[in-house]
Image 1 (cartoon, rainbow, N blue to C red):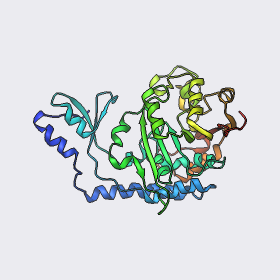
Image 2 (image 1 turned 120 degrees about the vertical axis):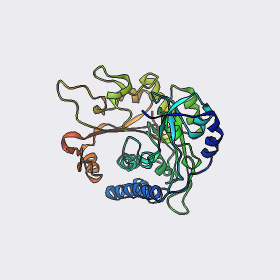
Image 3 (image 1 turned 30 degrees about the vertical axis):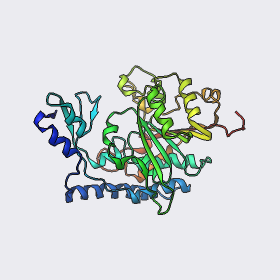
Image 4 (image 1 turned 60 degrees about the horizontal axis):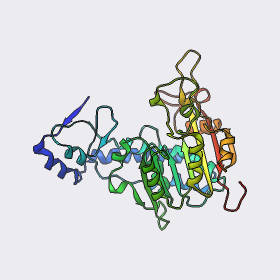
Amino acid sequence: MRRLVLPAVLITAVAAAAQTAAPEEPELLRAQRAVLEQIRAEAAALGPMKTSFAQRFLDATARLPILAPRLPTFSNDNDSRWYTYAEAAALGATFELKKHELDVSFYWNTHYGTPVAYARALDLAASRDLAANPAVLDFGCGGLGAPRLLASCGCRVVGVDVDPRLRVLYSEEEDTGLIMNATPGGRTGELSLVIGQWPADAHAADKVKAAVPGGVDLFLSRNTLKNGYIHPAEPVDPRRLVHLGVSDEEFVGAVFAALKPGGLFMIYNICPAPAAAGQPYIPWADGHCPFPREALEAAGFQVLDFDVVDDEPARAMGHALGWDEGEGAMKLKDDLFAWFTVARRPAAGGPK
């Protein structure tokens, strides 16, 4: 474990360094270009998409920016609290922290892989009369790679997650706020990040409302709202689960309230094969909708699709992205499965 102790005599110097960009190094720029070129190659491999919205999402990779050099971030021993460079300096001489150097690949992909893998879910949503330039809530975003691409399509986007490291990972001014459209002359997008257990955390709920005050056109959960995460079939370490903090009925009602009339609630889950008999239970292998159809309908939703199997398109995406190649290659036919559920909040005056 690597630790940092910040001597009091260095606090002023460190805090000052936090306000200035480190000198650009050619190897840093080369590393950034390599990551962005990889994302663009992945986008090209997935296209063309069936809907113009999903294709615009992939095309937006062409204008992902080179980032300003980043200073390290820090966390406590169990990574439950994270700090920017300046925050770490302000804590003083006796506070020990773990130091984390920013990998530019982690900035875009975090732990969850390429952001372009959202394209299939967006293609499905757009084919179900999704509003043009939709306002989007990405629940359990895991990072701002995909939300950034959506914002650069002219969308107003809020990413919601409980991971405290995301606050410091995306702490620079260029990370959120107004985002230039990937199409010159196109509508400017807007990007926000909310850290907290939405909707149970009132502060997080208020921040979401402030970010998208008129509600959202698409409430998207990709690989977060899995039945195995919410209702595991066997006892499992709670750290491997998704804790809603409210009842299923309250959560579904909050999603309904967050949507504009006509808006879509979409759950898209890609999963590995379940554990073999006698092996430890894998909660993330159960990608069915965690909420019964009846619960969605009771909240007022029109259920358009419920637990639709999407294995073949998901495997085609996995093949295009090279998941079946190299070290740790997947046997896509045996170990990649997908389901999706789509529900609509009825348009104003429409049937419930």
